[in-house]
Length: 301
Image (cartoon, rainbow, N blue to C red; front, side, top):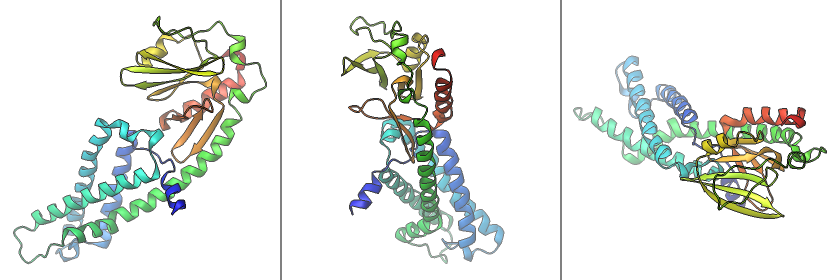
């Protein structure tokens, strides 16, 4: 049981990128169409021709696709529930089970409507429809997701080892902030004290405010600033080591002390006493290039 709980708590690729989500559900819909046409549940084998069977399979898979598109509203209107840094295997399983139940119910209702004028067709119960939907769609989906999970886990762990060799904190060169200690963040807020580049760790966007984390004299400090990440980046364009690694996070590349790989991607450890920062999948390629540039050109950053 403890091992199962541990697995369910493992990071899992989140559904926070709508482009990836729509590509995924399109692939699932195609897979379900193929499975339905081959296995022919829901009375499909009773239809008179192959064309009718295909059209009915297309109706069911299309219905499932539409339901998953509608479910994307959860991602749009409640993004905090699907944040990458908090998404786990357990949450992914729950989300898939909800998709399964919703799709099964809608397909059952569609089946009732399609055969409402044909009393000779016996409609399966909702419970049986859920089981059939699982056999024809969800079980293949779970199989694909399991294979994808372990593939990504192995790949990201391997890549994280390589990336850790490139982070500036592992270099023997003098610290960045010792060479350029005249650089300070610009916050335009008199309540926030001067923060040098060397002190700055990262910032997090929460609603209309940025929460700035820094280390002053060995103590972690947090300051609140009414601003957006985009505006903050533009204001502090004179600091080349600020990297927008995630929609809600901006980090100081020179303060990364460790990069952790998991199935969801990468987590950046900025300080042992604070949480790790995620790197969005869309930012991974740029992140690798920036670290490589800093390693090759440490004096030019």
